[in-house]
Image (cartoon, rainbow, N blue to C red; front, side, top):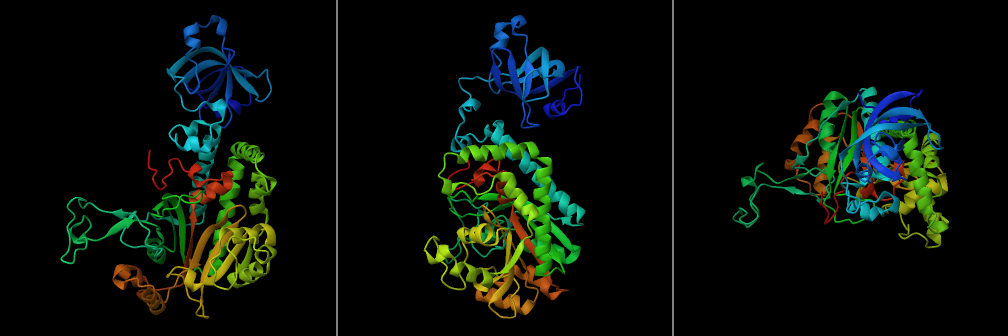
Length: 478
């Protein structure tokens, strides 16, 4: 008999037929009531075993996280909480689990930190199975959106010789021996003898390469892993994460803001429609977690309320200059409540400032645009005032910046001059400059850290809890 997913059984419109299903034991009560989960849904299905006619040695093998197959009849549940249960005719233990050694005893509510140390098993908990299902659905929604809009999926290189951000915080890729590294006459590492014949690194962004393809295919997007060698042990940073980066030829900054707003609404809405049970569970989890926090530290909105906040409110578009005036004159700044005070134009906004604009002042998602050139990357288009660039950031409640993008500098002479000012060698980006020589045109794009999106949608508070195996300083265990 073909086996059925638990989600299919719980969503069945009838009962009274024989079924086979498989999964992992969540709980086993009174030698009779087995809660089984196969990962297809947040919900377990109750399997009722005839313990009086089952050998004791078989019952003893039904332990937390044991893999098991059950055969029986799907019947209407006698208890509350679910519509159907299985009256078990026979079962088979597919894989034993030693209850005394299994590190994650589900009923003991292990801490998130403990679960990070057991990342290979944490997905067997309700919290992480819910998060990872939402992550999967969001990834599908990303591809679905761009496919429906006529974008082409572009695979940016992971090994690169360019630094799109200009930050220099990159992981070096080399095949040179560490104990006998070849040197030049000046004593520097001789990368000519390395595998690629030059210094190479793991990518921090696929943007520059994506721009070249947008200038031929019209509209493309990347969705792949990126790497930052920042020694940041915070709840918001990872050394390895996934980035979504669309690039569109002939789009100006306004078009770019329209695209970003439409895209992010689409994927959030898709998650709310296709992950309702998981999001409801995660909302309750967050409420339970925050009961122990002081009132001032609790979220102002419940999870689903926060997601609907994004879906139901138009994004407010505000220039950086206007935002600085608002922040400089607001009560938290005047009363020294901000950790980083806003004193003058040109300040780089922090998360506390971004959240104030969204949650307190405008009370809706905010898109800031036209930032000072000095705090933004070299590839952003310089405005006519000579001091601001056509950059934009989207700010969300509870998280601050979630999207960053810009209209790209399409003018060859201006781009070269900006590179010179930042000491970026032309010879390193000759191929990038070529797109400004041969058929240049205005074009725009943005980047969205996928884990930031998952963090927002799931209500988790640490970015290490929304990626299967987080890579952080001093941590690459799995």
